Length: 142
Image 1 (cartoon, one colour):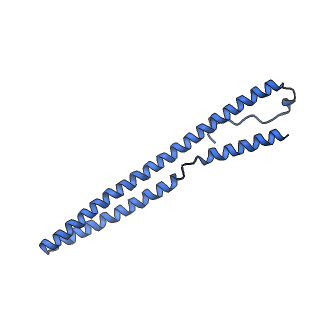
Image 2 (cartoon, rainbow, N blue to C red; image 1 turned 30 degrees about the vertical axis):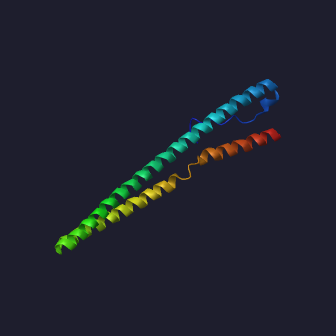
Image 3 (cartoon, rainbow, N blue to C red; image 1 turned 135 degrees about the vertical axis):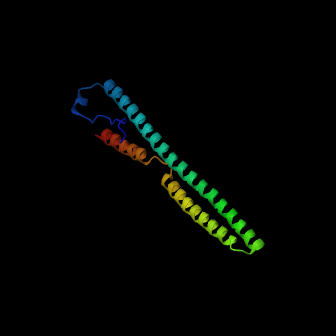
C-alpha cells in the first residue's frame, strides 16, 4: 500500500460517547481521506502501466524499422544476385536475414511489454476500494 494512503481508524468503544454530529464529521473526514488515497493509488498505477505501454510501443516501432531495413537489404540482395551473379548477393542475403531476426526479437519484446501493461485497470486500487466498501458495510450492519 502506498505510504501516503491512510486507512481509517478502526471502530472503537469511544463511538458510544461521541455525538451523531461528531461521528458524521469523523466519517466525512475519513471518507474524504480514503477517496483521496485511493485516487492517488489509481493515478500511480495508471502512470506505471502507461509507461510500460510506451516502452512496448517503442520496441515494436524499433522492430518495424529494423524489419524495413531488412527488407531493403533483401531487395538489394535480389538486385545484386540478378545483375552480377556473383557472391556479393550472398553477403546481402545474410545481412538481410540477420536484420529480420533482430526485428523479430524486438517485436516480441515489445509485444511482451504491451501485454504487461494491459488492461490499464488499477487493480490494487480497485481491490482496496472493494475492501473499504466491505468494511463500511460491515460497520454499518453492527
